[in-house]
Image (cartoon, rainbow, N blue to C red; front, side):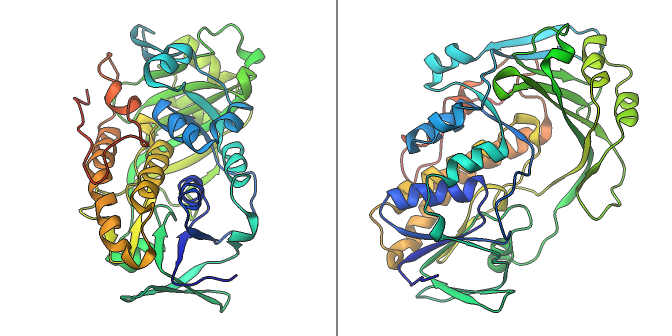
Length: 387
């Protein structure tokens, strides 16, 4: 695949990488994406796109395609795990669209990736390219891949997740930390749990400690219900972060929860079990001709449902900083992007770790009201209270 020092290279064809590729190409740049997988496959979990993420996608023209298979949760509801008491209720759907300019969408990650892939030329995605060495100099960045090939680009962006090789090349090796929390994921047909109220809402059952919760939301236009449940666990010994789980173990972990929550777990036939890892906020994301976005820069726990949203915001704001900027002159623009994004992403990262946001109401505007297409360039977002 032809590249040059006028090319922007992106490592990672996940959500953040593809959004960045689309946005940067729209801004006039030559872009190539390097992806270690040999083909796109329907893998990954279901994700929650809150209004800030959907509005960013709408600005790229991707939102309409995402809506085809997505559900639109009616509310965001908090309930106490044992009594079922409702402690907060935030209207979403049309109300969110009126307030924030976009609704909340819940969608399978593969459906979103397919919509993104349709917006970017397939011939500019290099599959089967696992980077093993990255070397930067004043004129550009050279990538060496495990298949023996190499590529030269003018700017390199790391959108390659929590194990980012670009991050390691920039700042040295560092291992993510197991949080002591595991998550269960399952999907059940909505008709099987028709007696449970609020199936069309995003509902969070707050447990007896910050590590324990059950979250449910609609999928596939409401035909299915996605279940995400977390619980403390001291260690994780498996090589993979995700493995088949035990439905019996799942039900046993949440025996103290309200009958309506347990009814959802009783309907599960199969479940995946995942270890949750994190890193601390970074003091910098950009160095010379390289920069990070998404989980490569700020991997976070899923408790604010902002992992995908922050990656999408990063990608749009980054593209705005690089619009009209030649790769030879990109160093300052990359630092300005860092300045614009690092405070907000770090605040969400720490808020997700604390897991108290919107438990009893509070301010959602500072998250949902962010407009990646309109925030001032180079200026950090002013965040409101996170409670």
